[in-house]
Image (cartoon, rainbow, N blue to C red; front, side, top):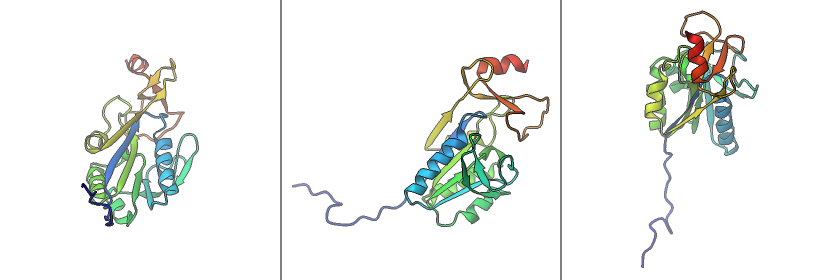
Amino acid sequence: MFIEPSLGTKQKHEPKGQIEVICGSMFSGKTEELIRRLNRALIARQKVEIFKPALDKRYHEKHVVSHNENTIRSTPVQFADDILLLAGDCDVVGIDEVQFFDEQIVKVATTLANSGKRVILAGLDMDFEGKPFDPMPKLLAIAEYVTKVHAICMKCGNLAAYSFRLSDDQEKVMLGEKESYEARCRKCFYEDRH
């Protein structure tokens, strides 16, 4: 007779850390999906901490806000390492606009996941030139789960994976919204870049 090892004895379930990355273009719903996942964790009565880069003050100084104006409280941080100091004993760590952090965010996400936390990161996977937006490629490589969300091309209506900058500004990081960027499909993105 086979007896299941867990029957009759309580097993302690150690938290299993993991990294989830939500990526895509501007206006694709990355932050919306991040907020949805974090709210579900809150409903499940998990301890949640949310962070964003201090430089991102487009919608609110302290809250993570989607383009649809859904919001969740967060802690703005200057440096990725600050997240390790502030995450405490939470179960879930959410990080928005991850592309604005330096390469240290990869080590931070790994450290958090290795300590048993669920780490959910959202950010652009490509910059305004259609090139991989560091540190996102490294985060995509180490993540257990990757979700790529798409916007709608503002020129032709097809699925869009690119963020087209409307100005001639060549700075890699330029905060902006609908006045500065449009979501574009591959064809429309490259037609207007040349």
